[in-house]
Length: 233
Ligand code: LAC
Image 1 (cartoon, rainbow, N blue to C red):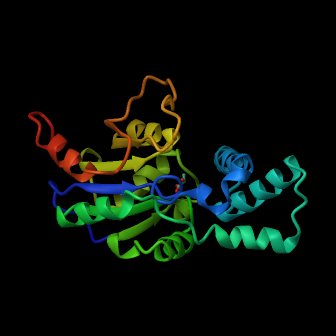
Image 2 (cartoon, helix red, strand yellow):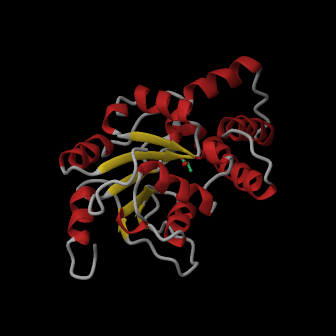
């Protein structure tokens, strides 16, 4: 963004959908299953488009995944229902622990970015509606690279845009594919276990997060403490 930051400055790159913002807030709990199929297909479509090198904006993955979920559950959504759901996707709530963690990170002088598969415009609107936009130094969207997480190209792009170095840059994500992608690209990563299931598993690839937490509470403090350990920088 503005050239390299101070070598010692820590950069936190927060994943957006599912980590800062509750994507299942779009639908009442009775439609939980629908919401999960929608989300799973949205991600699957992004992975497949990345592999096929057939890029379309993340909102296309979201919209086509909604069509799939509608057909799968025989929900026969009309055009208006679909529009309402896609509009609701821009007004999703932040998780309860987000504001405090962002405030702590800001006070501690960390560089804070939102880093997402979503387009810059979509993330801007989402964070604005959730009332947390001002907490970020910037938004980094994969859209500029025309690929999706976990392509290594998007993590390199994050570093370039944030003017940051691998060793001082932390991805914070509830998505295990994102955590594994960041660690594989040489970054640090925090896995946020957002799943209510106490046995939520990280994919067993032998690639472990630097830190695992159940919530964002006190995360900035833990990251700073980690950096001050002997041998860490
Ligand atoms: C994002 C998706 C992966 O915000 O949650 O990038």
